[in-house]
Length: 251
Image (cartoon, rainbow, N blue to C red; front, side, top):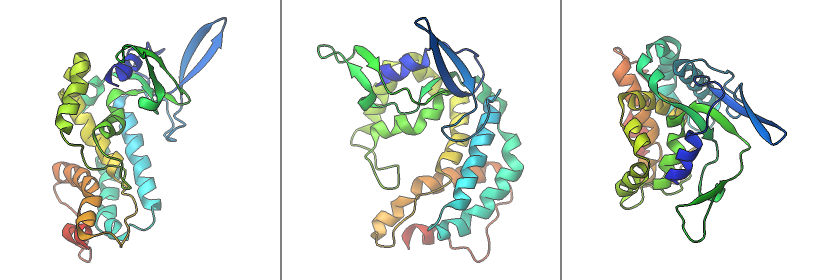
């Protein structure tokens, strides 16, 4: 799978630093790529900078959170704080994120869309289902890549497989150029802000879950949100009538 991702990331883009949907047109056996507004997530664009893209992504995530039903406990604690943060702090996204490579991003990359040789599984013969293709920071594929190392789950981010760290190491070691990028300050800073948008809106959680299941259901959401709020907000806002984090997790 690492080789399939890398193959996409090496596709030459029509405009090196523009972020948006990649639109293909073909004449006389030649394919031409253009970059237009993002339709897959409805972000708009095209965006001329990574920071502009991140701001649009985070604002879109806030709208989704505001519309989400059945997560009132979570909203009571986090929605006012998130809204205040989004309205006042997005200009603080560090300039270092502009170094993250912009690549061709297959929106549904996975084993189901990669055809390999029956004799040599490391030989990729084709990558299919190019319905949605974007020009975007490679680290925007964080969730798709991370789910290679996790079990499927209703909350969208299941527990790690046994020896998941070894699986991650094998993945990134297969593509050493991208392994170096993945450890870079630029990527780690990008992911801090991207995860804030990615995990901002939790999935609905049933009251029928056991205490252990409830404890883990919103863990990644809370971790990503608290990380950005605590790091970038001096005066954390918490409504006096809001439940504590422990109440959200265990009740």
